[in-house]
Image 1 (tube, rainbow, N blue to C red):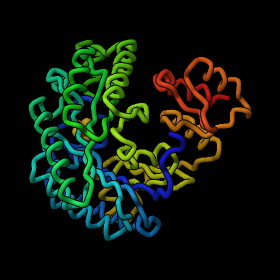
Image 2 (image 1 turned 90 degrees about the horizontal axis):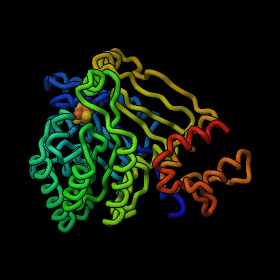
Image 3 (image 1 turned 90 degrees about the vertical axis):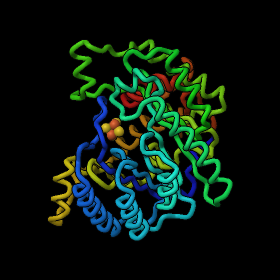
Image 4 (image 1 turned 60 degrees about the horizontal axis):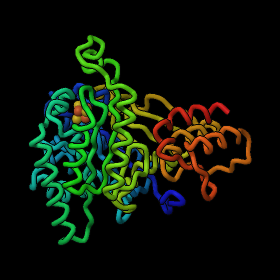
Length: 386
Ligand code: SF4
């Protein structure tokens, strides 16, 4: 892998749909549950108005990612209206990657067919774990049986449709490791079962216990215990060993793809400073010079739009140093690493990191090893200080 596969990249479009049927215990995302269809309808109208405004400055995209929230749980009519507005307001390049985040409980043959007809060609399935105890602890809406059914439907459906249609459908599975009470056996069982369904892409995130969530309260009260750092490291290494020995490419700290065709083109934009537009509450945008993000309050977001006002919460211009630091932080998380001539200032630290086996220098790029990926945040913090 020499350079990141970014040739001819257009900007990416992210759309945040902040609605879920129930609230998971670890969730710190901008989302609400127990809402009515009228509220969602009002929100969709506002979102489409934000899109029309954005269309004055943004024209082309080659990736679209509809996330949340649980976008798969909202009425198909709403999703259709959103995607019609996307196609009307922007030029979506041929062969774009168009992803929908889905929850296992929403997957049926009919819904897969409808989502495909609406225009989605990549599905990101939030399995998180197959261990029933962990699913209950996380407060997920699905159980193991439902997760396995969703995986089976996904496998069958993408396989059959890729044979009979010209489009290529792919699917990704999101997993969480480091759940309190989880051990290496549970985790390996989840990985083992998941790969039986041949997902094209797997993301394995470490659980973060965010302040203010029910999980954080349980941790503070001592009713559950965080996993230790050494178990976290063991789970991380096991994941790498297991997935790479089963043919997956470990291309970013938390991401594995079955072939290079399955790298997440949308996420690549976040890591390599390709512009992206975020629509909806809390969504972030970057235009090559500045980063900005929308307000997170859903009702306020709608009111602002209905009154013809902006929904930007804050804007942060990026100077050269901030951009350079961000490149270190983001690109050293990927197998392509960072373009770097180590004859410049601060080369001693870079050389030390090569000697210690955290980085390797190849073809003008500094790339993290597995050892480096495991402590990427700490390495980035050290390098940003020089
Ligand atoms: S499905 Fe995702 S966004 Fe919704 S409550 Fe659970 S973690 Fe939060």
